[in-house]
Picture 1 (cartoon, rainbow, N blue to C red):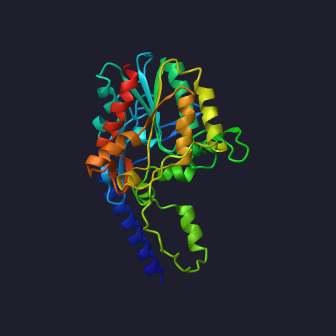
Picture 2: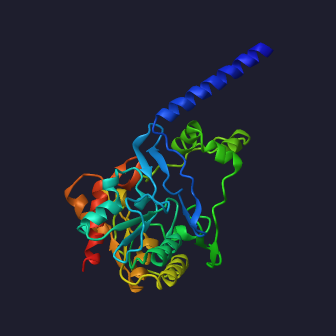
Picture 3: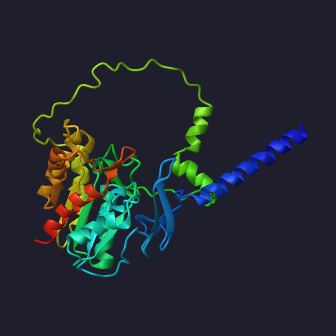
Length: 350
């Protein structure tokens, strides 16, 4: 029995070692070493840090990336330059699945005729109030006057604490008061596992959550009857957009955002906000009250808002080409990025 167990353990360790070596040869997403290095309210990757990124179990869209001296995935080292444009957002701006030339900052820079550098300050898992901190930082440290935001359609509501998309700044979902919630530093176990390509494959590619897995192992699950599917495939008829109504959560987030960025935006603030592209492509209703409310309030506050529905609807009326990276990834593909950045450039050149 003792020899059997020793043999099984040796075999398991050998298998894990082989799997680790294979994962190191493949473009498995690697650790980004994120931390609060440049500012206590801004989470960035390690400066000058090379890392790999890919999507899914089969490692689609592999990319080799490198951060600049401030921890952002950008073609530029950030220096003080009032002529620069700061492009701010979440993974839409980072665009890790795209080639460098196809990412939003590179395409916006080309749309501006190469006359102005575009500083890409994207960070996955962030929302509107975190963007305000990067606007502050870009103005204070680099003298940036013009800012462009590339937003998901739910970025305003994701700025509520507990959304899972906050690096530091949010509003309490009950009281709507400002809070600062820093991301907890990684435990020793996480720091060790960051160095393992196999662990990165399980967590980054397969999305295995050890804590959730343990809960499932020790929790009894009872089968339930599937919900009725009657009427589930009924197409949605798109009504005319109703008049915007006050929404306390959206109103509070937007007010907090513009209150924070007003001292820093000395030039233009251009905001491009995504729409429900799959519904638009299928000619279904796309109206989103929170998104519509945000657009209205942002325009009243003086921002130039690009409603991407006005860009994408004509595209889908004449083409069947998707604007998504793929059915497994709803981020904008190079064509979608080009449509948006072309529109972004126009108000910056007026």
